[in-house]
Length: 106
Length: 216
Image 1 (cartoon, rainbow over the protein chains, first blue to last red):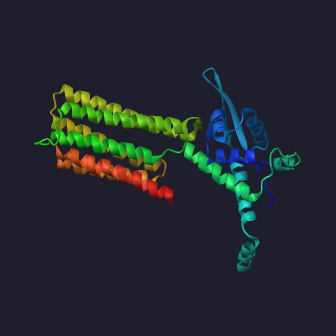
Image 2: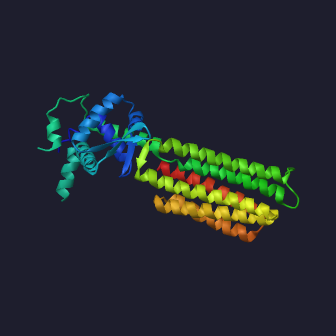
Image 3: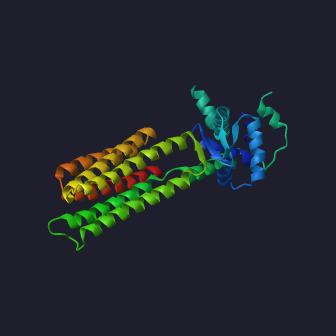
């Protein structure tokens, strides 16, 4: 099993972990997301664009009064991709002899 | 070609990860988010338990026939009020910090639930005002105010437990409601001791239970 390259990068993995830690339908404002990741706005934007292109996150641009406010959420496809990623990771981390053993049992 | 395949063609933008590093990174970041965003029930149960224990305790200590401490009842009432207001301030600051920057479903849910608390206790403020205007004595005032508001606390905790499927919160609500029913039947002034020890003490036990649950 190979790891989804869209998620398999330090920055994007941390973004997806953060957004999927929230419940479905929950969004984070851009500044809060940035502070939870200790990253620069530019870096975060770059990686968000890649995730958005893949359909894994939705970026909502709006206004709170006159102040522009950007909110980010993991899409359903993004949550599924993250689950698949963690499952693939788990499979890679399980020692091969254990995998073989469980296959023999079947 | 899936979107994932397209990105595979791009050069990677940061240091490559091996699976173990990925797993560690996920665990670390998830813990960080939970720590930053989740409401800490230990803190909330702790401050409210302490406020009830000391607040109802001081009211009871001056209400009994032979007061345990030499304090005018109005100062005991003031101490009670200050303790509850302090707990409310700690709660508000904590909730604002943890929920800052979170929008969407759970923020809406939390705000609605917050309004339920705010309006209920504004209502009890009005009730206190009305009882005072009616020249109700300390026994009647204390029974209605403590009993009524504590029943509301129990009901709100039970509802909170149902909303967030949080058994600790639900059980605490049941406990507070049950203690209040007993306290109302015990009657003034000892209802105050029941509220302090069983009500406040129960919340402090709730804080301990939450700590044990988190350790697991």
